[in-house]
Length: 301
Length: 114
Image (cartoon, rainbow over all chains, first blue to last red; front, side, top):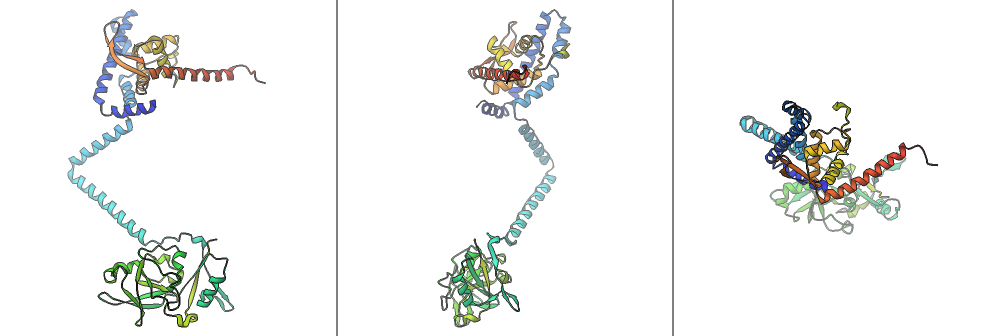
């Protein structure tokens, strides 16, 4: 409590400096006088009494300095002094001040801009990279990531070792984006519905397709990249435009998402910002077994 | 001559000041210094570079209060007196010191423990 009180008084005394200085000078003066009188009483000559009184306490300025340090908050006072001095100097040299301010402003601005860009484009690791595995199959001819949809379905039903299991294709598909002022050809890849949750992708808007929609002859859905949505959202609306896998199959309801290149499975790494992600079985239900799919696995054990 | 005298040890001055004020009543800075030197049997030398910062600190902590008054010779002087918090502090610090010296005494005494 007393320490708190002392601190409060020290802060307050920052604003009452002249009063304190005057008070202190008076006290010092009275101390000297009393001392001299005391010396005289002891029988010293007036000169000797004065001399001894001044000699005894050590340097007066030193004492003042110690008391000043005890009274206020020295580092704060020095800081304020430096600030005042700096401001005075800046006011004295407006040219220099302008250049200094501009330099600092530019520096801070550039650093912020660079950081923002780098932070945006630099790959972010998965939330649980040590639990994600990429599965390969061993053939007599060598290893390969290729599998088939029936095989994938079988694995998801039978495996107990892996927490979740997802597949995607190589991303060679081209789809046409229609609607808006001009059509556009996009690259697309098929992924199984659980891929988004498996690699921890958060959608910026809307939702991803679900397992129930990832079925033969299911609804025509696509998830599009954030970059594409930003570029064409006027044409696309919030989620109303259409992507056609080919001229006969139109994809309704588009959701944009923030799936970055780093968040795509290894073989989808070339899925550039202008791309769409479609359910794995979409439109290909007739020849399920023929879709080349690499498989992507996560284990959360 | 002054060199023979010890300086006041760190941390002991506050208690000396408080105790002096408790015994003597309100005093000015010079009086306190003199009294402490006398009480120590002139073994201690107290210059005001040590005393006044300590007084200031005690005042900030609320253990002593000061006001201007007149000395015996009708000189204006700043008088320090003990506050109620100061009285409690004297008690507390006295106890602490007694305990500390008792402990040290045990170390200095010839070994008695089993």
